[in-house]
Image 1 (cartoon, rainbow, N blue to C red):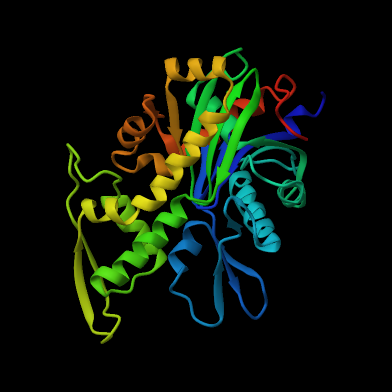
Image 2 (image 1 turned 45 degrees about the horizontal axis):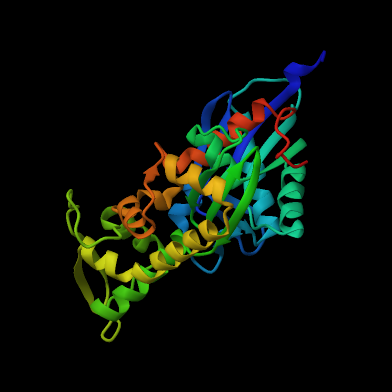
Length: 340
């Protein structure tokens, strides 16, 4: 192809919480999936990290939008602004006289409807994508972890993101059984907000709940390596006076317990539906955890004890899906599971 140098290949993990873009086998961008918009002109003021700093700090003239909810596009216009802005940031690094033809591979939840898939494709095309390929997140996560997805054996992946948790059994380059549940990072955050209100009479925002989860998030009450308790400041619900509360990892394990139990039953449900030969492969290889939720302390141990199959946390679980989309990008003609 004479003008192949004009084709730019981008692999994108369009996540509810973060968007990761790989370009030339390197992470070109890793930013929060959030947009700040001027309420009067409806123009985009900031995206990514800059918009995240504005989140929950805005005045009536500015609003922040998270375009993706539960892994799918909830606000089409904001999503388009965000994708365009991110691609522009990646493009600003390369010097070219011509606008490149964009070839994009995007990871989306396996439970997405045709309408939701169309919305992602349209957003990418409006942002300049000439060839847009769609890959399901569990498949991308499996590729990113380094599993041989085309082999005639069963691999199981649990990808816990911000908006959805994807549970899938993969064999021969296809998804045999899958379940996409909305019990994920955002639900854990609202569990923490509710708990702080109920137990400590303190009102906290989404951003603080996220910080607590990162600092002391755990799913079992006894850890070998205990994190330091986290100090939270906020208004008392009754008096509006400032109060300080100290949160331990045991409290977080208690407050997100029900949500984690829902994930356990979804994993068991998928295993129940798995054909016996693939099931025995999974018992042999173990089950792989990816996504930001995999970083919750004690998660692999709790799941292993519950399901009696060994769970492994992928290395750099946050970027497993993005790495997988990057691998798929190089072999778009070989992989039958990519959708155009």
